[in-house]
Image 1 (spheres, rainbow, N blue to C red):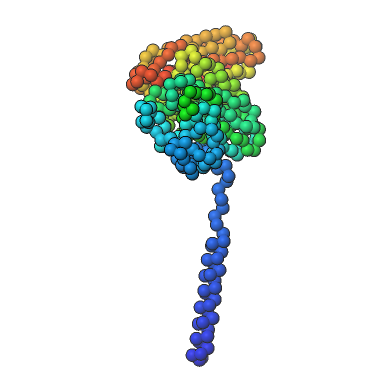
Image 2: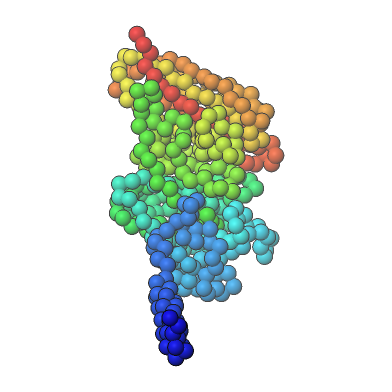
Length: 387
């Protein structure tokens, strides 16, 4: 049966109004339901802190000086903090900014800090790039509050990488869900602007390594360590005098006066796995581990020695100590990679035995004669000798 024209028009009008109301409601819902906000202390996939590479500019600048404590997104600054670009500077200076274009320059008694979310009791490693900007002694103080780790000064006056800023790691153990990470210049210079550059700040939680039935060494292949930034080709320096409880290289003590270098297979020659340690400062660059042993029992210590394929040439010599036994392992490096295995036997004198490794000689890269380098250590293993 056909509907009268009047009823048909009325029906079309009702459907049109209903459709319009539905569209309007949907639009209203779309506007009133924004996407969820990102977490307050989020880091990116590479572990960088919020604006950790400082590529988001401050809201207010006086030339290069940051104006306002909260002007720099993600950070709180105090004192004379400059927002600088890499490259040649007025006065003949050159700022080596290793990651991106921008960095912070921390003047006398100044600081930059950020709150990060952490897990109480967990071990973390901060990775950051730093270098000096003046001819004076400069250091960068790293502190996390609250935490179970005391603040430490990184001596950036020693340049390990001659052509670029060094990348460092520093470990801490968290004691609360939120921690304040602070980088500061503790010195007072004649020129208030003088101070270290800071760039590319990242964080990584480090799992606790354990010995196994097949190896008494914790973190034997150095596969647990600080964040290595994707575009970094200089490795990560492990500061001296690091205890194993808070070391950025879990299980290992950096007991020397100078740093050791954590290197990755993407940019260096590594004997096995993805990571290894380069002993870059002769007898001043030593790493150690204390293992549980049975007195008067014999053990076999084995390890690999090589070169990082980074232009480090010459006769290398790694000295290894276990109990009262010393072993010297020579390696001839052409700077093209490669490694050799070494092993020796020792008898434990006590319930705990210290193992120590260092390079007997000092080396620099042949490309510039300045950048420190040295032999690579990897695949450390200790097993009891069967009777």
